[in-house]
Image 1: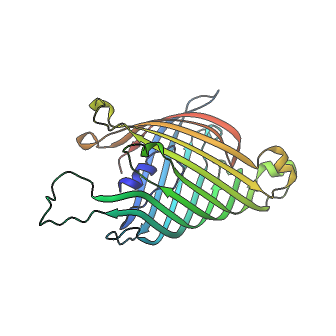
Image 2: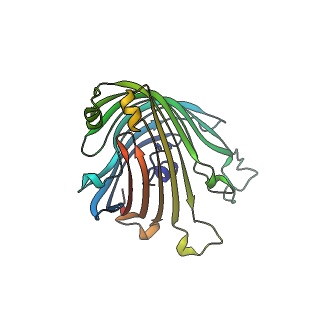
Image 3: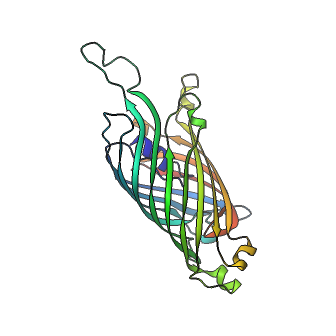
Length: 295
């Protein structure tokens, strides 16, 4: 489950989690937090994530592939909805996943199975190609849309060498349809417009668990995310308003509670976001300080 929770528990990330080989997953995360938008007052909020999924690999061979499915609901709810920088989403997805890895074959008769060393001959991450159905909205439901898209996802969880500096990435292309839009109403364009949706993102996760660092620092994780979207074929008035594209960056630092220290709390985090999402086309900046309750 490490590969999945590394991505999902990083609250800054919108990137889908990595389902491990032979994995049936049901995960629920809740993170109460203090939220302060740029130039605004502090408000209470909670970050929620519910994820279910399944994937089966024959891990005894190199590059095993299988079908996968994933269902997820994710977002932030704030006492002041106008301070909320996050979209609310629900999606279901499925496709083919390929593990870019091969386990090391060990002969117990000739090799000490307890000796230190990697269990894998190589592990270059996971590659998934499939389709996704998504409903996206802001907290006030003043902007909402549905989309059907193909998705491409590459994820890894390696922390040695230069791997932490290589991002996990995803891309999506498909059709979207506006369900409700106060922006379109103000511009005099129809809500039911169908258009082409393009979206891509990258995420980095860096652990401070290094032998040369002091022990109190080792539970610290650094996270970074960059997302961009583009809507093609929208009404000219929407395009002229600048709501047809946007970018968003998120940075986070988290302290994970491990072993006996992990009881009710899984993580303490500080996150900063800046940018736009398809249902929050006006730029929003915000800080969030919170805790992740242990599942």
